[in-house]
Image (cartoon, rainbow, N blue to C red):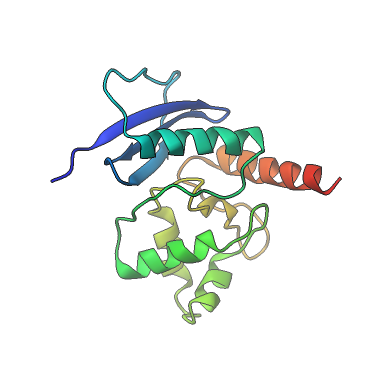
Length: 162
């Protein structure tokens, strides 16, 4: 069994915890705490790369992620998460859009459920999912974070067009 490692990152949205092995990132989640912990042990390069890429994302210089990560979920959930990765930076989609993409138009609720179980925040961009009416829908990290992420991406995209 692989050893698991953890590194935390202070971000504009609070502390982010990155979990993984020596080979892959398995979880990127927001923590409700004030300050990131300093690591006392050796951190694998993949987790450090993830942290650095997230820093670049928040700085507005990165729109896609290249480090290896691993899902932990059912085949259907993984299909949904793969679809989320296909939503372009600074764009949005609805649960219905994803269900149609998967050719499972009646699976809107199941898509929403899978979206809520995503453990790779930002990298698997569940924050880009909005309601069919254009409203913000639930976000495990809190709606205020979702709103911030969408605004950040829009601002970065607009600054690149100038």
